[in-house]
Structure formats: C-alpha cells, structure tokens
Length: 423
Image (cartoon, rainbow, N blue to C red; front, side):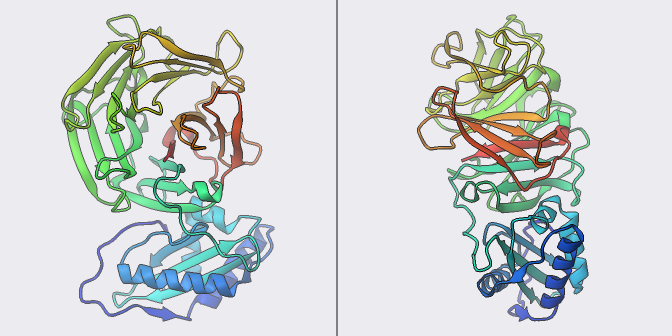
C-alpha cells in the first residue's frame, strides 16, 4: 500500500534520475480507472507536471516520503510497472478517494528512480485545467487528523490529515506509523500533543488496559519523523483502567498549554461524581497535579463524551450529552477548573438532534481564530454524501455553524478510527 513512510536515506547514493518511462502509462491507467468508475478523464497540465516533477526529485533526494502540495499522491515502489503503482493507490482508501474525486479536471505526474531500485512517483491533481495546488498547510493551522487503528492496508496504525487551507479537501499526511495495528482498539486512545517541541503535532498512543507494565502507558511518535519513530514509552503511576469507565484527553492545566494527561472516571467513582485525575507533562507523566470530584453526576458512559479544553489552557471539563436530554437535543455542559470543577460556566442545547451513534465523534479545537474553542462533530457513517463529514459549531454561544463539509475520506468502521481537529 502506498503511504507516507519515512525511511533511512541510502548512504553514498547517486543523485536520483527523473524518468519519462512510466509517466504516460500511469496517466493512461489513472484515466482508464476513472472512466471505469463513471468519471471524466483528466488532462495533463504543464504546470502540475512541473510541480510533480520537482516534488518527486526532492523526495528521492531525501530518501523518504512527504507531501509537497495538497491534493497529492506520493509513493515509492520497487516494481517499475505503472499498473502496480496504480494498484497501490487504489489499495489506499485516502489515495483512492483522490483518484475518484469527481471535481478534478487536470493532473501532473512525476517519476524518479534511485540507485537502490526505488521508483518514486508523484501525482498532483487540480479542479481546473490550469490550476496548481496550494502548498501543504503550515503547522499551526487547525487541520483534521484521522487515526486508523486497525484494518489498514499497511498493517500499521495510520495517520491521515486534511488541511484547513484546502477546506479539508486536500491531504497533507498519509503515514504508516511505528505502531502496528492494535487488536483491541477499545483499550487505546489516540491524541495529538506537543511532546517533542513546542507546536509539534506528535501522536500519542495511550494504552489503558492489557499493558506489559500493568499501568496506563503513554507511547509517543514524533511528527518530525512522520510518525515513524518513537519519542517516548512511559509507564505512568496509574494502574491499568477499564476503558468503558474512563475517558482520556490531553490538554493544558493551570494555563500551561502543555499536553497533560487527563483521566476522567465516568462511572463507579468513590465520590459518586464524575472525577478528573491529571498527570503532568512536566513530570514526564509521573506526578499527579489534580484529583477532583466534579459537579457532574455519573451516568451511562456511552451517553456522554467528555472533552477537556479552553482558550486559556486551564483545563475546563465539557460534557457532551448525546441523547436522553431534557431539551430533546444534544447538550453541552462545562465545569471550570478554576472552581475545582464544582461550578458550571455553560449549559447549552446544541442545534443538533440526538447523536447516540458512536459514528458521531466530538472534539474541541480552534477553528475560526476568535479566541474560543469550537466544537467539531464528525460523522463517520450514514452520511448523505457517502463520505466522512465534518461540522464545526462556533464556541461563541454554541449556536452558529461555521462549517458543513464532506471530506474525501470514506466511511470507516467508527470503532477503529479517531478524528481530531489539531491546531
């Protein structure tokens, strides 16, 4: 499967060679595949061709894979057959979605070889015949990250990212990570946080149960390595937890904006309330900085999603009640960390019906830059478009929609996928 994977650069290798072989064959194979699926063939764009050729030489020189532009397929293959390259694209759900994007009208292709037998190929797409694609989004924009924990073509946990700059239509990351697919996705939580450097979007794989240490474990893969290298393996002071009774978040505490580890006990607590327990990033997740019983009453854990976050990075706790509410709608309730989680700062009936299905996922993130955190709702099944859809509700009053859009990503098994708005 063609995925973004960083590999060591070969030592003492000759400069890559830009090739003409395979380019026409690949273009023809892609257009035949589109036509077989009822789509128009694409015209070769001179500007996109130049763009793809420049990118493919860069990648071959670097010895790895990354995206130079949004709306782009990149891969290397030891098979010199264009048909094999196409099949690798088709086998990747994210790449296949690009091949079958109905609005595309033009493309450009680049092929280069290295002396160790790798054939690098890049395909850039655009909607207009002469349009070039924008560069991949810069770090800091609120991009949409999708983590597939099992059932992947690579046999690894995979990360796919759609850029805010493309309206969540263009991919900037396709990565097979250092972690193999997990047989028990319910005991893992995937989050993003700045572990290796300020602003980094490192991938946290938090293992709650069945760990070798008997503790909750934190495993971190670095963004700088395209998630191919480990940055940390940490056994925390927390005993292993029952996933159904606990929810996990990374968020600031006391205004530090650091990825502190929040363990939220939703049922069976000693206090009879929802409880918040926090391990600090500053201590390497070895020291507790919060043990607090909140004002929230435990209930069916499937009915409530707990999110942590606020603009100040202080760690306010928000409960998204998905069904069986007084208003007949999905509701939001927030308690503040400043009050020791004893006082509410928000109660809102959202402009959303009940969201009982686990195919509806929620997260908080900065979408519009107004200083508040907005609410992201992701629909992973049952959409009218047949694609994963995202809906962003403004955090300024929780009543106005900022975005409704279908992404290029298909409809996965909701139990195996986590979606996050990462800015």
